[in-house]
Image (tube, each protein chain N blue to C red):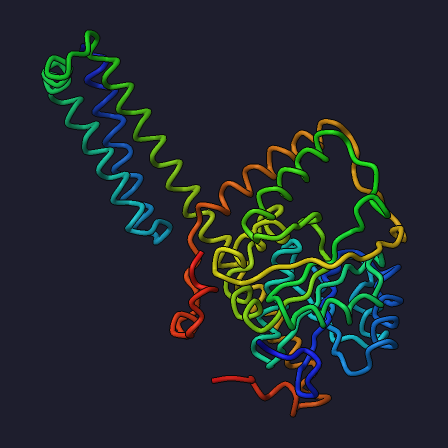
Length: 255
Length: 125
């Protein structure tokens, strides 16, 4: 496979940001301080605050979307950028500071064995209390995706992940834009086109601000949308780029 | 019978005139106009020769001919709505792709001024 530790490997750390002016600057500085050899791209998803300015002042490249596209749209933009500018690795990190940048290197190293590595919250530790229906939805997603991946995936909605060259090419073309598409459907796309997906345990920080919604109605809605997103993802078709089909990867293609 | 006849004729002719006017002013694309023209012409035919409806409902076995008319009309409207949703989704996809390209081009212009070597190289092909 490919060697993420090689000198020539170019890594792009992507922070999709929507109105994160308060935290984006410190996250960018943290990443750049730890990994001076990585490039940092902030995709400003139509923010109405000073997200773009804060990110640029912290030294990131800033890509400003003209209007809000959601995390999926922001990430597809980032994957297109990565593909066109010759990056081999894309690491997605939340701009709100809940992902600890010290784990980035571990995720990148994990790409030696897999095409996509998810930073999963520890089982139990650091996991926020969730409503019953929401937990049910997450368990359902985890079960189906683990079966598809043929290895345990516990936290499939994590937005902390590293993608290798094969996934970059795939996601530049097919990154889904709908709700839950950026997490769940993108995993299904990767798995169904023969990419390997694995997870590494990471510890989440407490969010600098904001809380995940907890109302039972929203939890029920989440369950319905999760099932719909997963079901659709399982029956949709994604044409893989031409040259992939010719590669002699018998075990990867057969699924 | 008389009222049905007049309403049908007036309605369909009004629709045809409106469509022609919209097309003449280039407010309507031909591909959508054709659909409505077909609907208007069919309404005109049914209004002028109501026997068609009686004959068709006899053939299929619908007891009340008006029900056949309502059923066909609502199905046509449903089809058109679904088609519009489809077109809307396609347009949304395209504007999304354009937004992404605009953002990437803007990034390239802004950074191209600072360090052109890294960004002028598209990587592959």
